[in-house]
Amino acid sequence: MKSSRNRIEVDIPQQRLRLFNAAGELQREYTVSTARNGVGELSGSYQTPRGRHVIRAKIGAGMPLNAVFRGRRPTGEVHTPELAAANPDRDWILTRILWLSGMQPGFNRLGGVDSMHRYIYIHGTPDSEPMGEPASHGCIRMRNADVAALFELVDAGTEVRILAPTTNAVCYPVGTKVADALAARLQPPTGVTPHSPVPCIAPPALAMFDHAGEVLALGRLVPGGNAELHGRPNNGLPVPLLRALQQQAGALGWYNLRALVPDSWLQACLDAGGEVVSEPLPSGEWMGERAVRWPSFAQKTIVTPD
Image (cartoon, rainbow, N blue to C red; front, side, top):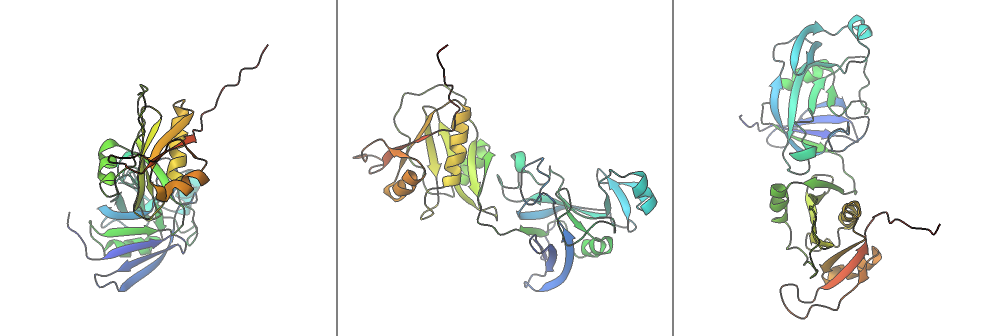
């Protein structure tokens, strides 16, 4: 697969797709329609994924405008109002397909967030469908003449950045290999408080990402009611990740969650409902860190007398 020097940006707030050359100069600009359900990466969400992608495959070269595709294969049909009226429930994929693959493991690649396995395309849509407003089931829709023109200007390997700036972080479960790779990009983890191990099947690690898919923090539950937290220097306590770990712990039936934290996180830990349960460690790898305990989100059963 050859790489292209062109680059595509999809601006979700403005519902615009822009094509830039290697010098960063704008070459083309088109109106698009992204997901009616907004932005998100999870399989089954019917949302448009964010972050860095690549065109993995180009499909439909030489086909007429309004050619119909199902399962990325031409059906031999050409979309018309009559065909649409006879098939009111079909999600029409027309003219050309640019099949996208995520480039950021844990955010839009692999596991339950894999854009390619979600069949996220840039594709043509009927002229009757709205443009310039979110209306798709997750893909990026274009007018048929526009997607045919764009198809000729890009190669497989062209980078596609899907942009939706927001201050909200998201947490997704990640497999062991992805977790280890992400952890290597973060500062060393907080320590684990000494505790008699409680046998359990550890749930997947959780990674916290910003809107562009950059990893901000990583957390794992450790048998014994403990949490291991990796973060970025000066970013502070990753509160959304802590909340997600509390949910995981609650699902396992744990009523508390503990971790060793540095002094720089201490006030944020207290603000997040934590309770300091140890003095600073006097020596060792985590010297100076304190144990903090949070309640999990387990549903406790209250037994009332008969």
